[in-house]
Length: 145
Image (cartoon, rainbow, N blue to C red; front, top):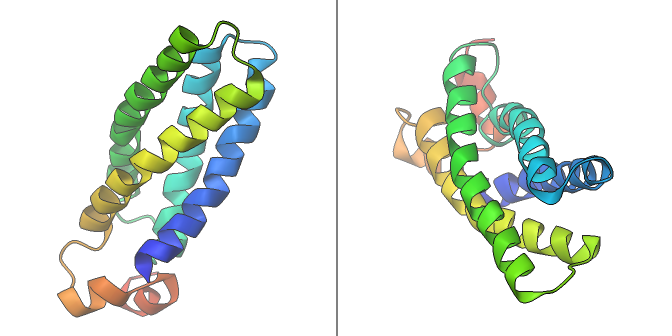
């Protein structure tokens, strides 16, 4: 259940990422637009996953969670930059929709790594039964406000 919630929250932030990329791509080349869109959507997405997916309330460990999100950004950036490179190497003049499709697919692939890392960091020490079935509303009672 938690993976489904993570995927839904992640999908919303993937849409934000895509919109940012399209807007930034008007002024920047593909790689800088990708990097900036990833940074902005990662920060927002980490807050979203803390609150909605893992039920973390308050500011406790916010800095650590954001640091983890930004560290995972390096992994996502490597994967998405590689995907753009492959697209550019195989398609003479890729269109914006092609770039966007490749980037969304690459981000979906890195999402499983993010889920696992966030789950370990945000659920970590709680009991295994609670960790396996918890969603934001299930966990909120166990967290300090």
